[in-house]
Image (cartoon, rainbow, N blue to C red; front, top):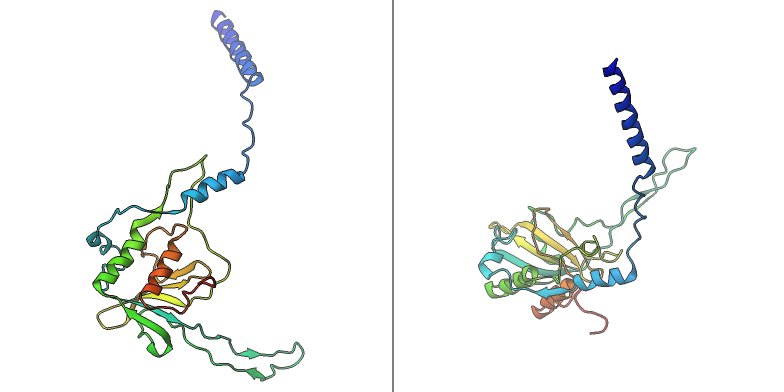
Length: 229
């Protein structure tokens, strides 16, 4: 009987403590507010390019795809007007064989294919010295800061919604075939890499402009001229 009384008292104490704890529960945290304009301004400043001189010329050539291909070429090209064959259909009749045919070009940049030089407007095979300058831009210019700010992290910009590439960096294998490439639209600040394995550095805010000027300094004018220049 004594044991039963103690058990009942213990249960009552537990219930009382639970009720008090529930009554004095910690209030819910306030809702998280979206980042302010000032917060975005801080992040924007951190996304600016800063030269760090982190990697030597030898270290930079160990990054893929520079470590796999010795021939690197800058190119410019005019994107063809690509339009597919159009077939008009009627819901109550058989397909009408009225076709609008336009010339459809294969993509200029395709891996394991010969680069069609006839479709290029300009090209420049890089020397060792010129290649050293390119890798210096790619790998030694990075974000001013990558530290989080109020829980926010910087991320590479997606650029503008447009995409009309006119330039590229092409990596050729020992047989002269396209091994890898970086297709670039300087106007829209966007690019297309041929492989997810590529490590071409951090694209801080001014990185596209730095590469654009590098193209111009190496004689590639088409697709690299700003309206203000």
